[in-house]
Image 1 (tube, one colour):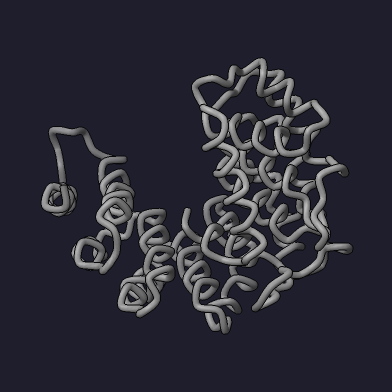
Image 2 (cartoon, one colour):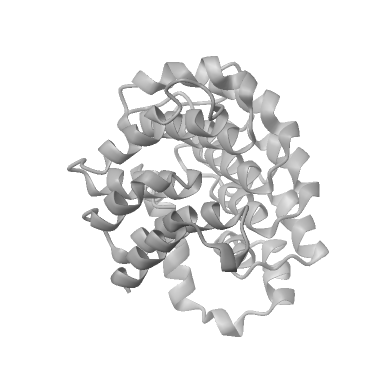
Length: 293
Protein backbone atom coordinates (compact mmCIF):
# COMPACT_ATOMS: atom_id res chain seq x y z
CA UNK A 1 0.00 0.00 0.00
CA UNK A 2 2.55 2.61 1.12
CA UNK A 3 5.33 0.92 -0.76
CA UNK A 4 4.81 2.22 -4.26
CA UNK A 5 3.75 5.65 -3.03
CA UNK A 6 6.88 6.20 -0.98
CA UNK A 7 9.48 5.50 -3.65
CA UNK A 8 10.54 7.47 -6.67
CA UNK A 9 10.14 11.17 -7.20
CA UNK A 10 8.51 10.65 -10.58
CA UNK A 11 5.91 8.32 -9.13
CA UNK A 12 5.18 10.66 -6.20
CA UNK A 13 4.70 13.58 -8.56
CA UNK A 14 2.23 11.59 -10.63
CA UNK A 15 0.27 10.58 -7.54
CA UNK A 16 0.21 14.21 -6.43
CA UNK A 17 -1.03 15.25 -9.87
CA UNK A 18 -4.00 12.91 -9.51
CA UNK A 19 -4.71 14.01 -5.96
CA UNK A 20 -4.64 17.67 -7.01
CA UNK A 21 -7.12 16.89 -9.77
CA UNK A 22 -9.32 15.18 -7.20
CA UNK A 23 -9.29 18.32 -5.08
CA UNK A 24 -10.30 20.44 -8.05
CA UNK A 25 -13.15 18.22 -9.19
CA UNK A 26 -15.64 17.02 -6.58
CA UNK A 27 -15.77 13.22 -6.71
CA UNK A 28 -19.50 13.26 -6.08
CA UNK A 29 -20.09 15.47 -9.13
CA UNK A 30 -18.44 13.08 -11.59
CA UNK A 31 -20.72 10.36 -12.93
CA UNK A 32 -19.70 6.98 -14.30
CA UNK A 33 -20.75 8.09 -17.76
CA UNK A 34 -18.65 11.27 -17.51
CA UNK A 35 -15.62 9.35 -16.25
CA UNK A 36 -15.85 6.89 -19.14
CA UNK A 37 -16.29 9.74 -21.62
CA UNK A 38 -13.35 11.64 -20.10
CA UNK A 39 -11.14 8.58 -20.36
CA UNK A 40 -11.88 8.49 -24.09
CA UNK A 41 -11.46 12.25 -24.57
CA UNK A 42 -8.50 14.39 -25.61
CA UNK A 43 -7.75 16.18 -22.31
CA UNK A 44 -4.84 14.19 -20.87
CA UNK A 45 -5.36 15.49 -17.33
CA UNK A 46 -8.99 14.40 -17.34
CA UNK A 47 -8.05 11.03 -18.79
CA UNK A 48 -5.49 10.31 -16.06
CA UNK A 49 -7.96 11.40 -13.40
CA UNK A 50 -10.80 9.35 -14.88
CA UNK A 51 -8.71 6.16 -14.79
CA UNK A 52 -7.89 6.82 -11.14
CA UNK A 53 -11.54 7.65 -10.35
CA UNK A 54 -12.91 4.47 -11.91
CA UNK A 55 -10.57 2.41 -9.76
CA UNK A 56 -11.07 4.48 -6.63
CA UNK A 57 -14.85 4.03 -6.75
CA UNK A 58 -14.71 0.42 -7.96
CA UNK A 59 -16.70 1.08 -11.14
CA UNK A 60 -16.84 -2.39 -12.67
CA UNK A 61 -19.30 -1.63 -15.49
CA UNK A 62 -18.30 -3.52 -18.66
CA UNK A 63 -17.77 -0.31 -20.61
CA UNK A 64 -15.45 1.00 -17.86
CA UNK A 65 -13.39 -2.18 -18.04
CA UNK A 66 -13.23 -1.83 -21.83
CA UNK A 67 -11.84 1.72 -21.80
CA UNK A 68 -9.36 0.94 -19.01
CA UNK A 69 -8.02 -2.03 -20.98
CA UNK A 70 -7.70 0.23 -24.04
CA UNK A 71 -5.83 2.78 -21.91
CA UNK A 72 -3.13 0.18 -21.18
CA UNK A 73 -1.87 0.80 -24.73
CA UNK A 74 -2.17 4.60 -24.68
CA UNK A 75 0.65 6.48 -26.42
CA UNK A 76 -0.56 10.06 -25.94
CA UNK A 77 0.09 10.60 -22.23
CA UNK A 78 3.84 10.30 -21.89
CA UNK A 79 6.27 12.12 -19.61
CA UNK A 80 9.56 13.66 -20.69
CA UNK A 81 11.31 10.71 -19.06
CA UNK A 82 9.29 8.27 -21.16
CA UNK A 83 6.76 7.19 -18.53
CA UNK A 84 3.08 6.45 -19.17
CA UNK A 85 0.99 7.98 -16.34
CA UNK A 86 -2.36 6.99 -17.86
CA UNK A 87 -1.27 3.39 -18.32
CA UNK A 88 -0.15 3.31 -14.67
CA UNK A 89 -3.53 4.44 -13.39
CA UNK A 90 -5.40 2.11 -15.74
CA UNK A 91 -3.33 -0.87 -14.58
CA UNK A 92 -3.96 -0.05 -10.91
CA UNK A 93 -7.68 0.42 -11.50
CA UNK A 94 -8.09 -2.91 -13.30
CA UNK A 95 -6.68 -4.78 -10.34
CA UNK A 96 -9.19 -3.15 -8.00
CA UNK A 97 -12.14 -3.99 -10.26
CA UNK A 98 -11.64 -7.76 -10.15
CA UNK A 99 -12.40 -8.39 -13.83
CA UNK A 100 -10.55 -11.46 -15.10
CA UNK A 101 -10.76 -10.47 -18.75
CA UNK A 102 -8.19 -7.77 -17.96
CA UNK A 103 -5.56 -10.45 -17.23
CA UNK A 104 -4.17 -10.87 -20.79
CA UNK A 105 -3.79 -7.10 -21.20
CA UNK A 106 -2.11 -6.77 -17.79
CA UNK A 107 0.30 -9.57 -18.68
CA UNK A 108 1.14 -7.68 -21.87
CA UNK A 109 1.66 -4.54 -19.76
CA UNK A 110 4.53 -6.36 -18.03
CA UNK A 111 6.44 -5.72 -21.28
CA UNK A 112 6.01 -1.93 -21.03
CA UNK A 113 9.21 0.12 -20.94
CA UNK A 114 7.79 2.14 -17.99
CA UNK A 115 8.99 0.65 -14.68
CA UNK A 116 5.87 1.87 -12.86
CA UNK A 117 3.46 0.42 -15.40
CA UNK A 118 5.12 -2.96 -14.84
CA UNK A 119 4.89 -2.47 -11.08
CA UNK A 120 1.18 -1.61 -11.26
CA UNK A 121 0.49 -4.52 -13.61
CA UNK A 122 2.22 -7.00 -11.28
CA UNK A 123 0.27 -5.68 -8.29
CA UNK A 124 -3.02 -5.94 -10.17
CA UNK A 125 -2.28 -9.45 -11.40
CA UNK A 126 -1.69 -10.38 -7.76
CA UNK A 127 -5.08 -8.91 -6.84
CA UNK A 128 -6.81 -10.81 -9.66
CA UNK A 129 -5.23 -14.08 -8.56
CA UNK A 130 -4.85 -15.56 -12.04
CA UNK A 131 -1.99 -18.07 -12.20
CA UNK A 132 -1.67 -17.73 -15.98
CA UNK A 133 0.53 -14.69 -15.32
CA UNK A 134 3.15 -16.71 -13.40
CA UNK A 135 5.46 -17.61 -16.34
CA UNK A 136 5.70 -13.97 -17.47
CA UNK A 137 6.22 -12.73 -13.91
CA UNK A 138 9.10 -15.20 -13.50
CA UNK A 139 10.65 -13.97 -16.75
CA UNK A 140 10.36 -10.41 -15.49
CA UNK A 141 11.90 -11.36 -12.16
CA UNK A 142 14.84 -12.76 -14.12
CA UNK A 143 14.97 -9.50 -16.13
CA UNK A 144 14.41 -11.44 -19.33
CA UNK A 145 11.71 -9.25 -20.92
CA UNK A 146 13.16 -7.17 -23.80
CA UNK A 147 12.47 -3.44 -23.93
CA UNK A 148 11.92 -2.87 -20.22
CA UNK A 149 13.77 0.01 -18.59
CA UNK A 150 14.99 0.42 -15.00
CA UNK A 151 13.49 2.75 -12.43
CA UNK A 152 14.28 6.34 -13.44
CA UNK A 153 15.65 7.28 -10.01
CA UNK A 154 17.95 5.65 -7.43
CA UNK A 155 18.45 2.83 -6.78
CA UNK A 156 17.59 2.33 -10.49
CA UNK A 157 16.28 -1.20 -10.07
CA UNK A 158 16.05 -3.19 -13.29
CA UNK A 159 12.55 -4.38 -12.38
CA UNK A 160 9.94 -3.73 -9.65
CA UNK A 161 11.25 -6.81 -7.86
CA UNK A 162 9.19 -6.44 -4.69
CA UNK A 163 5.88 -6.21 -6.58
CA UNK A 164 6.80 -9.20 -8.76
CA UNK A 165 7.92 -11.32 -5.81
CA UNK A 166 4.80 -10.49 -3.80
CA UNK A 167 2.60 -11.43 -6.75
CA UNK A 168 4.40 -14.76 -7.19
CA UNK A 169 4.00 -15.52 -3.49
CA UNK A 170 0.29 -14.76 -3.48
CA UNK A 171 -0.23 -16.76 -6.69
CA UNK A 172 1.46 -19.81 -5.19
CA UNK A 173 4.27 -19.93 -7.75
CA UNK A 174 6.33 -22.70 -6.13
CA UNK A 175 8.47 -22.98 -9.27
CA UNK A 176 9.83 -19.53 -8.46
CA UNK A 177 11.20 -20.52 -5.04
CA UNK A 178 14.84 -20.93 -6.17
CA UNK A 179 14.80 -17.50 -7.81
CA UNK A 180 13.02 -15.77 -4.93
CA UNK A 181 15.52 -17.21 -2.43
CA UNK A 182 18.26 -15.22 -4.13
CA UNK A 183 16.45 -11.99 -3.23
CA UNK A 184 16.61 -12.71 0.51
CA UNK A 185 20.06 -11.08 0.40
CA UNK A 186 19.21 -8.25 -1.97
CA UNK A 187 20.88 -4.93 -1.01
CA UNK A 188 17.48 -3.15 -0.90
CA UNK A 189 15.75 -4.07 2.40
CA UNK A 190 12.18 -3.85 1.14
CA UNK A 191 13.01 -6.43 -1.55
CA UNK A 192 14.51 -8.72 1.10
CA UNK A 193 11.25 -8.46 3.03
CA UNK A 194 9.13 -9.14 -0.04
CA UNK A 195 11.22 -12.29 -0.59
CA UNK A 196 10.73 -13.38 3.04
CA UNK A 197 6.99 -12.83 2.69
CA UNK A 198 6.82 -14.90 -0.50
CA UNK A 199 9.03 -17.67 0.88
CA UNK A 200 6.70 -18.00 3.86
CA UNK A 201 3.73 -18.27 1.51
CA UNK A 202 5.40 -20.79 -0.79
CA UNK A 203 7.09 -23.02 1.79
CA UNK A 204 5.27 -25.96 3.32
CA UNK A 205 4.60 -25.83 7.05
CA UNK A 206 6.32 -29.19 7.37
CA UNK A 207 9.55 -27.76 5.96
CA UNK A 208 12.36 -27.18 8.44
CA UNK A 209 12.86 -23.49 9.10
CA UNK A 210 9.40 -22.60 7.82
CA UNK A 211 8.90 -19.91 10.48
CA UNK A 212 12.25 -18.25 9.83
CA UNK A 213 10.71 -16.10 7.12
CA UNK A 214 7.93 -14.79 9.36
CA UNK A 215 10.42 -14.25 12.19
CA UNK A 216 12.65 -12.29 9.85
CA UNK A 217 9.76 -9.90 9.19
CA UNK A 218 9.12 -9.51 12.91
CA UNK A 219 12.75 -8.46 13.41
CA UNK A 220 12.38 -5.99 10.53
CA UNK A 221 9.72 -4.09 12.52
CA UNK A 222 12.62 -2.67 14.54
CA UNK A 223 13.95 -0.85 11.47
CA UNK A 224 14.61 2.87 11.96
CA UNK A 225 12.97 3.71 8.64
CA UNK A 226 9.23 4.32 9.05
CA UNK A 227 8.52 3.52 5.42
CA UNK A 228 10.14 0.11 5.84
CA UNK A 229 8.16 -0.56 9.01
CA UNK A 230 4.98 0.28 7.13
CA UNK A 231 5.93 -2.12 4.33
CA UNK A 232 6.67 -4.91 6.81
CA UNK A 233 3.34 -4.37 8.54
CA UNK A 234 1.71 -4.95 5.18
CA UNK A 235 3.80 -8.06 4.59
CA UNK A 236 2.93 -9.60 7.95
CA UNK A 237 -0.76 -8.89 7.45
CA UNK A 238 -0.63 -10.48 4.00
CA UNK A 239 0.81 -13.75 5.32
CA UNK A 240 -1.23 -13.72 8.54
CA UNK A 241 1.78 -14.59 10.71
CA UNK A 242 0.26 -15.02 14.18
CA UNK A 243 3.50 -14.90 16.23
CA UNK A 244 3.89 -11.31 14.99
CA UNK A 245 0.72 -10.05 16.70
CA UNK A 246 2.27 -8.35 19.72
CA UNK A 247 5.19 -6.98 17.72
CA UNK A 248 2.73 -5.46 15.26
CA UNK A 249 0.76 -3.81 18.05
CA UNK A 250 3.97 -2.38 19.55
CA UNK A 251 5.43 -1.09 16.25
CA UNK A 252 6.16 2.62 15.97
CA UNK A 253 3.70 3.31 13.17
CA UNK A 254 0.17 4.58 12.65
CA UNK A 255 -2.52 2.65 14.51
CA UNK A 256 -4.54 2.47 11.30
CA UNK A 257 -1.78 0.47 9.60
CA UNK A 258 -1.28 -1.75 12.61
CA UNK A 259 -5.01 -2.51 12.66
CA UNK A 260 -4.94 -3.45 8.97
CA UNK A 261 -2.01 -5.77 9.61
CA UNK A 262 -3.71 -7.37 12.63
CA UNK A 263 -6.87 -7.78 10.58
CA UNK A 264 -4.84 -9.92 8.16
CA UNK A 265 -3.72 -12.11 11.05
CA UNK A 266 -7.26 -12.41 12.35
CA UNK A 267 -8.68 -13.37 8.95
CA UNK A 268 -6.07 -16.11 8.67
CA UNK A 269 -7.13 -17.46 12.07
CA UNK A 270 -10.82 -17.37 11.22
CA UNK A 271 -10.55 -19.21 7.88
CA UNK A 272 -10.83 -22.79 9.20
CA UNK A 273 -13.11 -22.08 12.16
CA UNK A 274 -16.60 -20.99 12.99
CA UNK A 275 -17.03 -17.71 14.92
CA UNK A 276 -18.07 -19.65 18.01
CA UNK A 277 -14.84 -21.68 17.90
CA UNK A 278 -12.30 -18.88 18.13
CA UNK A 279 -8.75 -19.99 18.81
CA UNK A 280 -6.72 -18.41 21.63
CA UNK A 281 -4.62 -16.75 18.92
CA UNK A 282 -7.66 -15.15 17.31
CA UNK A 283 -8.88 -13.91 20.67
CA UNK A 284 -5.44 -12.44 21.40
CA UNK A 285 -5.39 -10.60 18.08
CA UNK A 286 -8.87 -9.19 18.73
CA UNK A 287 -7.75 -7.95 22.14
CA UNK A 288 -4.74 -6.22 20.60
CA UNK A 289 -6.98 -4.60 18.00
CA UNK A 290 -9.37 -3.38 20.71
CA UNK A 291 -6.46 -1.80 22.55
CA UNK A 292 -5.49 0.16 19.43
CA UNK A 293 -8.96 1.54 18.83
